[in-house]
Length: 243
Length: 312
Ligand code: SF4
Ligand code: SF4
Image: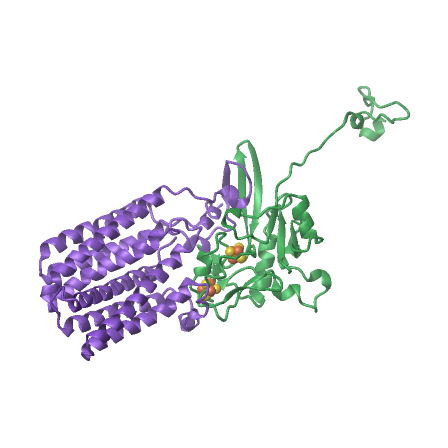
């Protein structure tokens, strides 16, 4: 069985919010839209988004690390938000594991949002129905798009390629190997929701310098050393002319 | 959570209506077994009408909770999995039973029929208590709610207020039943109070299962949010936190501790058959129950709040 999901690499996310804006742009005009805004240019602007990027500081100053953390529906394999929905508006697709809301059935009771521990469902204030990430279900299967564009808008927008998209049940997929090889993990595993989306942890980026890189052992002319200094008064425009 | 008045009124009004029905039926059973003098049909018919009025008002208030109330008819569909859908089915069934019970007494249909209809109503009444409470108790990561004390307290608090209301009614139309009803209201009130105290105590000692470390998956004891991703509010900042000061919350807690049982208990004790005093006891207890329900929602900490600790 297929389970489509995002794998988000926290090691390369730079917190630019490109995924947030491209998501909003695509989905406000797509089948899940509109995602309305209230007071967009006034005091206290607010609106519906499927995806948010948050920033956390780990550690105590000065030994801190900044973690940019994109958050959207995790398309849980055992989604607590689905069985509680009284109307059946919230459902999980059997064929690809995407969790969706049928906007025509939703009564806006908010129960599913209460039942999601991750806070990724948002009730649209104007439409009065529940909204959430659809994994861009209206574009990933769109045969009129070129193959390489059949991905969620956020994945295509990410400038650092921090977002991978694929089937985590296919052991050969890029997302599965990323989870396997790079320590992919799920959020709040304590609630047994089995989120399909995974996150890749920050990794230590080390710059190793070996002695033979400082002093070239294979230097044939054996002339490595200090550069000759121009005598005072001699022209020294730059390194090249002093040679 | 951010307490919603629609849900507070829904649950407290239903509770009082259900409790009132249970009180009517208890008197009915007692009278049929010769334990008390038989009150006239006015007591039952008036009681059933009052109970129905409470249920209808509660149902009406619940519509204000919905974004799309015009589609409310859809909400019974998933009764196999959703306690909310089950409540949506059981509530009208129970209303029907209360109506039938009142009608049976009005038409003097005879003891046997009244008792059978009442028995069916009692089953539905208990089922409704369970459905209403399980809507909250089944959410396991709302740890404050995920306990058997939740259905127990919904049952006891609702019954206590219903019996208090029944004693007011009895003072007006069946004075000889006032004593028994007031005593039953006192016992149920005491049990409800104990149950609520137990829940308060349990919740004060809860240790949250989720933390920022599990929320973002970074295993470090010191994590601080620097930005939640937006400057203005969102559904997430409005729906899941009450946004009141600690003092307000503490004041509501005191209101519930004083008004749910101690004050009405004293009034029930001294009022005898005085309908006015009994009515005041019910009114104060109902205010206490509103405070109780507000606090019930406010005290629940949703794990999603972990993601919304700092604006920027
Ligand atoms: S992340 Fe929340 S909304 Fe998405 S499937 Fe899981 S429980 Fe449901
Ligand atoms: S808000 Fe809509 S999708 Fe969510 S539980 Fe209610 S009816 Fe279902």
